View 1 (cartoon, helix red, strand yellow):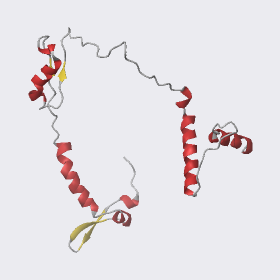
View 2 (cartoon, helix red, strand yellow; view 1 turned 90 degrees about the vertical axis):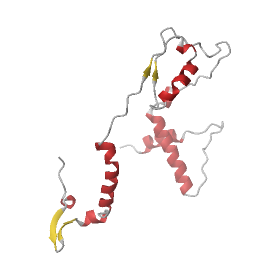
View 3 (cartoon, one colour; view 1 turned 180 degrees about the vertical axis):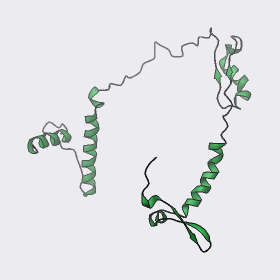
View 4 (cartoon, one colour; view 1 turned 30 degrees about the horizontal axis):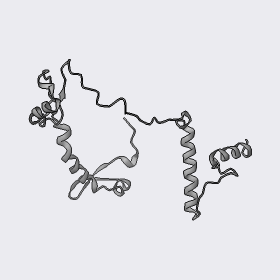
Length: 171
């Protein structure tokens, strides 16, 4: 159990109208009157925690080959019963082998090349550096444009910064 600080302790002191709890000034300033509201809100959700009833298990359907000849028709046939649960499991018969729906002769896709150095933490550091640089210029009222070298290539400001730091801030 965690130790309590003095200002966290609520002491009970008797008053003229009976006993009442006096709360430290820190507790009072953080909304002592809201404590009763929070209690009411928690009672609203009490039924979900203390009186929780597990929902019924979703049914599992094992259709025959004849029933599953047209899967869409089978789903529409069990729909009325299945809607009561929101989710069901349908185990197709062993012989069910759906046809491949993609024409292999015309199907193509563009693979995405991901360079390993893009996954590393240095990329995150670099992006953070550039974001801070852009925000600094924006908040200073300056327009920011990435500098380019004589060949028109964008200069890597993060790398330039790291080189400068390593050369000028040696300890």
